[in-house]
Length: 298
Ligand SMILES: Cc1cc2nc3c(=O)[nH]c(=O)nc-3n(C[C@H](O)[C@H](O)[C@H](O)COP(=O)(O)OP(=O)(O)OC[C@H]3O[C@@H](n4cnc5c(N)ncnc54)[C@H](O)[C@@H]3O)c2cc1C
Image 1: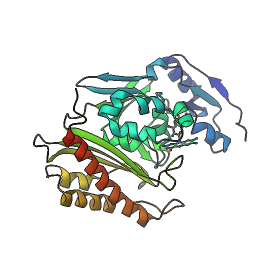
Image 2: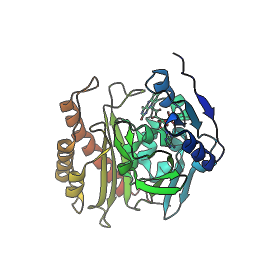
Image 3: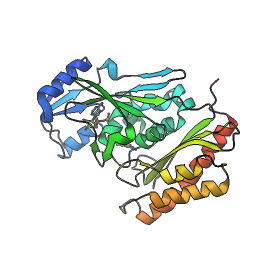
């Protein structure tokens, strides 16, 4: 299979890239790692006339941690850099876990964090982890920049809040509580190099008694067109003791809130059952890690 013809630009500054996007409008597509875009072009699902490669833009690279504020990740940061970042493994573990499950080592060395959210596949690996961790995204256009929550950025299957002329530049993750932990779990048929049947990410912060939940965010992937916040589960957990009965109820509520489809990977009913199990497991693991203080900053 061959790629259709296109004009290729590799701008060296964000300003230049935004200028090209403004000039070519709908004829142009941003090219990051190309692991989704080039596949779609080969499959003739997309036929952009112009590709604007953002891999040379320093402004979109790298991971920067500012203590007591949080973490900034450039949108063109490679998934394997996210997976292996010690700071992310320590303080935003669900994201490192999700990154480590994306595709193969070869795919992770090409694919970017921004591309994974901009492609907006309901089964994507990193968006649920980012949503559970409270991520915001910055979107730049020639006139300036705006910031929104990632959960308001992904609007549906392959649909985002990106407006014509905008580029996703950065993710921002707030500093987690010192009594917190985050966990990412997924379920799939083979366990490697395949699309998830579903995935779950949890961020749990304990109250000073180390027994009650002070704050929790649960995001479910592949059970709705967008990463779904299990809000009813979050409500019953917040302020409650992390007892088995509460964790089990949270799992049941998440399952009831999910709206999965049946497809070649699983029936909707099976997905609902697995959501309940994974939410329970993720909450239990997050509780154990947060209590053990494994994520307390040194
Ligand atoms: C073999 C294989 C296995 C895979 N396995 C998985 C998996 O297990 N889990 C998973 O989630 N995904 C998987 N993927 C999908 C893909 O690797 C990811 O979605 C990846 O993160 C996409 O990033 P990219 O940099 O390659 O994006 P690209 O393909 O370059 O771009 C994807 C889309 O986002 C747009 N875009 C990219 N960056 C920006 C930006 N900064 N601003 C505005 N628009 C932008 C592009 O225009 C395009 O529409 C797999 C892909 C392959 C080929």
